Length: 329
Image 1: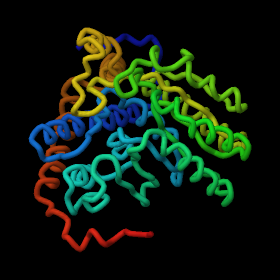
Image 2: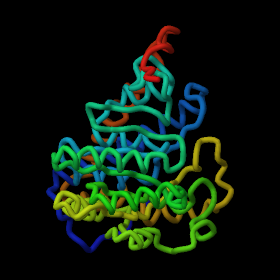
Image 3: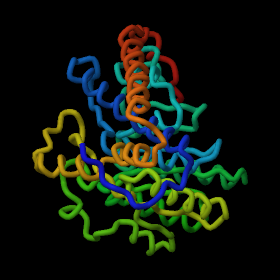
């Protein structure tokens, strides 16, 4: 694959660059394996893969501090891995097993980790946006300096509750970064057909919310924008919007044939803008790593992912009595 050439020198150390490469590669290999397990019938229901969007969450996680929170939509496996959740527990949840983060009861779209401050994937479009503002409200009330990253897509950006949330977040100066993961197609409708404005982040201007566009295929650009947004929030200046322009290589979910775009379009993005290949090129051209070094990383990642797959198959089904636990109403 021909990676795009970069004239800009990395603004991070070689070790950090390798760390980002490893984290993005883990997400991709994990999602590829999840796709295989879905095809084998071991993952049921919906399964939304994050392949192509890895730089978004890895870049933003690089801008976080301990205690910061994150909440997202149903395309959530990448966010879980990037914030440090165990691949074994994530994969076991995908297969509905007891060893999963939600004990096999949540599946692909609904798992949480209080330890990692991950407040879930959410299956209802844009439902997580007001939840993210609520998390930020709690932090403002506690005056603990924490920030919440609230992720949603370009399709969700057309939901009314997003703008109700923008209004409240601006009124109360909430420390929340609204991250629009604009992969350009929502479920199966292009942004050009579904959205009246070219740049979605401008909608925040009506509420006095600052924001910007970010190249979501460049992990270093995402990190830099994330640091700027976080500094804005921690300084008590209220919410910030990042519209991160990215691209998903697979369909909306595993059941989507993606006939609304051409194979040539997808292949062009893969060849010219792939986020992992971009970092790979930076590592090699800067002599921060050799081909053998990168092969060793890939081998290690594949072992981690294969172990997670084995764990997800070997973990038992939830016991029937588990249906009566974790009920709060």
